[in-house]
Image 1 (cartoon, rainbow, N blue to C red):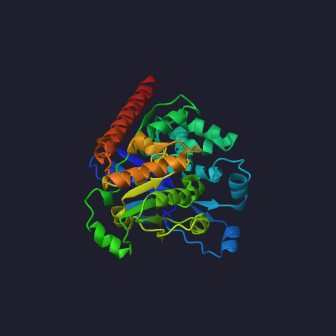
Image 2 (image 1 turned 30 degrees about the vertical axis):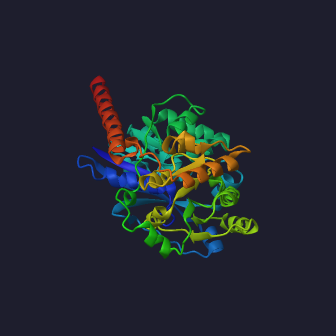
Image 3 (image 1 turned 60 degrees about the horizontal axis):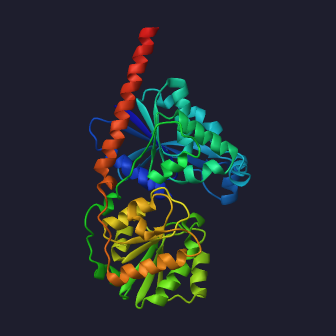
Length: 400
């Protein structure tokens, strides 16, 4: 079985969905009877952007990340595409017109596994020309947000959902939301496991790590994520303040970077919240130590697919409280999730204080969130689809 895994993103700025796919690739490549090649659609700036940003145009054919070989498929980041797609929000995929050039690369594969809208559309083009089946995995915003930005986004998402040979969703809730776009197409959820860094017990004890971070309080509450609007980070100061008002000897730690970090720090300062530490963006290998320091993790997101940070927290025995969106309740339990209404800050803060005062520990992470379970489900689908496609090709050949 020879498959190609495709994703879209940047090697230099890896975030949640990219890291999740990367972990799946690493585990899938360990399966001996499957030949796996990995491709990454990457953008390079047109001369206009390079002039504005004073950046050099560096394009490499191959990138190696944690032993995984990525074959880079470069598309131009054009000013016109940027304006039409990101500003005017008329188009759905900024590089759509450039994807045809890659179709022939995939003519000899048995199946394509795709993870982002540009590579999903490319897989659709490959299927049209060569009849090669493709399986999608939808991760969150690609279902929750982008289809509803404009008509083109909805149309393309619907096209892919209905023409894919199978659609995986990272949470049950995301699969349900996809029915608002179309009820056609084969669908199922597919959970992932925690990153490999969290599969073994932490190497350093909590006291040592807290001393390293210069944290001496009894309780440490944290947030780990990107400082962007969809993560609802601007509500953190309100939660911090209420926890601080009801619990003595507590500190807070904020891990991550993004355009809202300055505003977040300013609001925390205005609220006079004490003992807040900011780490900025950390490498994936650095986050487990911070996670092991925590007594509680906050996740107040406006939207999610299946946030991997919840799985990583639970694997280290760290309780999580969050919003009642996406796959969050599926991982941390409905008793720890709250609606984003006027009572949200009070409800999530009260539950946080209760957990800390009682010393509650989270339930053990379900076996559904294991790589063994994920790979079995994934490979079973791949093998069935390839077998069905081979039978169909043989039938068509005989019929001729």
